[in-house]
Amino acid sequence: MALYSGFAQSSLIQNIDNRTTVSLDGTWQIIIDPLENGYYNHRYQPKDNGFFMNEKMQTPSDLIEYNFDEGYELQVPGDWNTQMEKLYYYEGTVWYKRSFDYDKKDGKRVFVHFGAVNYDAKVYLNGKKLGDHIGGYTSFNFEVTDLLKAKDNFLVLKVDNTRKREAIPTVNTDWWNYGGITRSVTLVETELNFIRDYFIQLKKGSKANVEGWIQLDRPLETNVSIEIPELNISKNYRTDANGRALVSFNGAFDLWSPQNPKLYKLELVFAGNSLEDQIGFRTVETRGHKILLNGSPLFLKGISVHEEAPFSAGRVTTMEECEVLVSWAKEMGCNFIRLAHYPHSEQMVKAAEAAGLLVWSEIPVYWTVPFDNPETYANAENQLTDMISRDKNRTNIILWSVANETPISDARIAFLSNLSKKVKSLDNTRLTTAALDTQSSADGYNMIDDPLGEHIDVIGINQYCGWYFDKLSNCAKGKWKTSYDKPVIISEFGGGALQGYHGSEDERWTEEYQDALYKYNLQMLDNIEFMAGMTPWILKDFLSPRRNLKRIQNDFNRKGLISEEGIRKKAFYRMQDYYKGKN
Image 1 (tube, rainbow, N blue to C red):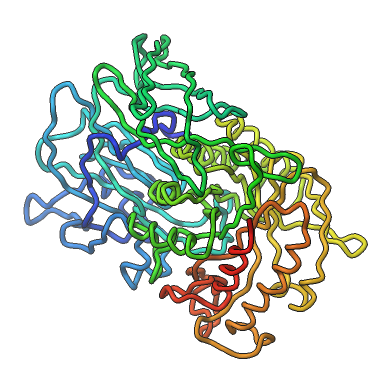
Image 2: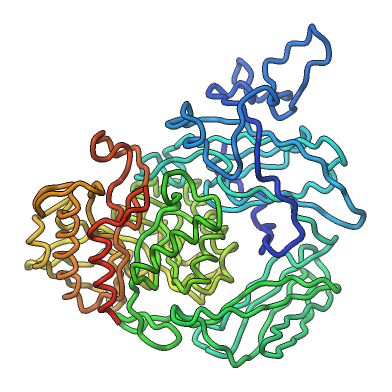
């Protein structure tokens, strides 16, 4: 079976938050199915009457060996690993079922929208298959108008988080493989034809001219309009035969920046129906080794972040949790966050946008994926397209990242350079990047000479002096050269510490060791004249099955500057002081 088939992704509906919706979040019934008995028969052939039929016994002699309503329950959104002890390490299939009623209205259409399901989702409504989706961190939707009933609908998902060599991400990672319906499920009600998608941003290189497009769901030549009441802007456009209108207008915009995260109420109007969004306007470009925001050089004072809940573990599921993570980054003095290593929730991006945090957004092309596999590439490109499709109107995103720590090869260069080209074909207003970890050494210098540097706008470098190589005190002496006249972001550096464990600065796992590591690394980084910013690794301790030291790690990657309980370590305050002194 093909890994990726492009299932219905061109129909992704933009801006769910501002449409007519009904939430299906809450308690779902589940069946744990490690042998996939609910999908395959004993000859390993797909069943016609699998668990997706939600069958019930009609007579005492019926043989039906499952019953959603008498089984376990999980909360959606959420991961299964932290909700049920027996599923903590589980990788495999879990079936989800939610029953609901729905008051259908004449002249309306209805879609079911999923914020994210990790990883392989097969979706059924009332026993009929809606479709499949591959990828654990991107949104998707299916139309359900003709399948809905007034009473007793049942939505069933087969969710499989099994790691696969050919998948994106591949089998070897350094974060928890949280399974389940990890983001919200929503019924979206629309008109028969509606504005499905749009792209409204400043034209590349301009502070006044907006260029973009509006796309109807169905082909129709008609009128659409854009209004920004605060600026007295009201513009009318005509869609073509495919239902697409090109947009261009000028405005005297108060530009979005970390110091001034200005968002405008924008209304898109079609056939008397208005769709509202909050959109900011800013420019981003490079000039030599500098990144320019709104025409002025900006040093990116950042931190890397995983999508893991504050004060515990498990997937982030609420806006409040996103706002806590954002507030911690702001407290440190950040103007920038790297959302690693996959697309985070739309809530997280919006929380950062409102708080004035610029964003690096990434797909999980991580470590050693099979770069010569065409299906793997198609999967990666699809996840990239989904990420950009959902978040292209979020003005705080300035960097689309195509990979993290990938080994040099001809196949890898072809794979990643094609992804970078794909970014530009979808959105040329932002910059491309990747986090690299392959530096050669020459004449006592760390050389940035990865050939992928030719194909991206900004070079990310992950380096762990004092942790994975070299002595702490030697880190301050490190020197760097680059082969590229491009900005460099030190996208990772750091080391582990168990919060509350104290000792000398040469005793690994102590807060003092981590703090000294930051001290010496910051001295080294201050001597890199072509550095445009940094995102140390990482804001908060996070779960990873690679971390096996029971007393110290206990399944946590301890490189966080904040513990899983939300307690700051010594190095947090060092970064805070450092950023206070950075312009």
